Length: 120
Image 1: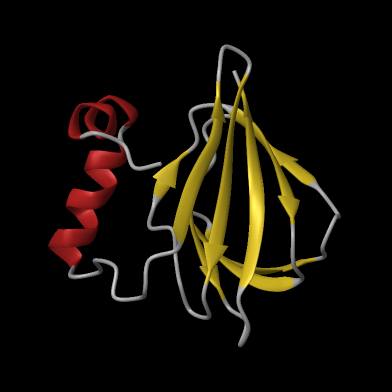
Image 2 (image 1 turned 90 degrees about the horizontal axis):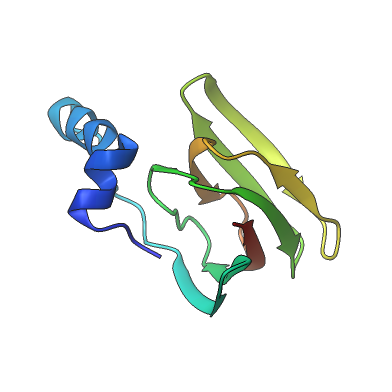
């Protein structure tokens, strides 16, 4: 789910986007698609679908979260500490903490999907 301008400014994502624009590094890859499936007092559940080469764009997570891969795939994670490749295995979950900032890119030749469960 995309943040509003006010949310981007409050989270600091606006600054990241401004720096990227100044450096000429705005997204040139296809956009991954997301479908929010649940949003209640406890969780936000979103399915993400990535065609080959697609990316989320830089973002900061406002909650702790769990990723549940639906398909195998290879992600390239761009972070402020550098880039790293991560292999997804269908059904093998992992978690990250609130404040994680990155851009997620499908570095596979095939599409992949995962479900993100944010814990409020």
